[in-house]
Image 1 (tube, rainbow, N blue to C red):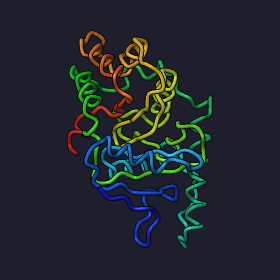
Image 2 (cartoon, rainbow, N blue to C red):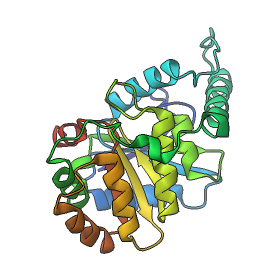
Image 3 (cartoon, rainbow, N blue to C red):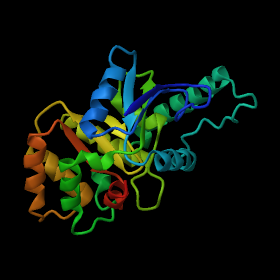
Image 4 (tube, rainbow, N blue to C red):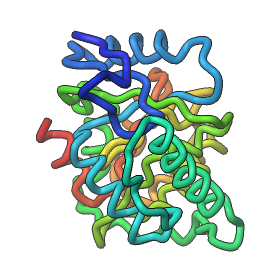
Length: 249
């Protein structure tokens, strides 16, 4: 494993909020340990990219544009660190405002049926939460944002671009609902969300996940609840093919 502080002469990261790259972690626990060390003592809020970072950045750019989350500014003609920082901050603040706008909010109940789930989707969720090493990529980018709200990481890298994905407003609704169950967003990839547990999970959490993912009669839901009871994390997919995405790593 290798850690590179950003920016460097030839590397910027995702944007001006990128503070480090963690290369080739040996395990998810090693990744999280290094992430927490990098985040400790910093102002604002830090988060980390999960799963396929190149795809994450690609779909995030398109999700920002297709959902009106860009500040409609031209990329700087002279991309100095100062001009890029202003550009990135404008995009972040614009998306932050829109995603938090009650008039644009998606009610959690509206997520029912939005993901095209198969009859194996619950088993895939169990597998992901049982083995978070599935989320490892060659590189993970650590972001530092000027906010105290973990939901605001969605304003920096809004995602959910393809037709069968949850869009950025729907992803925020899902993340906000998980916060009510005691799960705080700390990471996002091209198809996955990572949450840190702040309270023990309950059957009400599983009922909400059934609404999003379907398959309410699956016996694996109780397996997931048992697994989450002993885990400090919760991992969810926001695309219909999230299991294929993480298994391709």
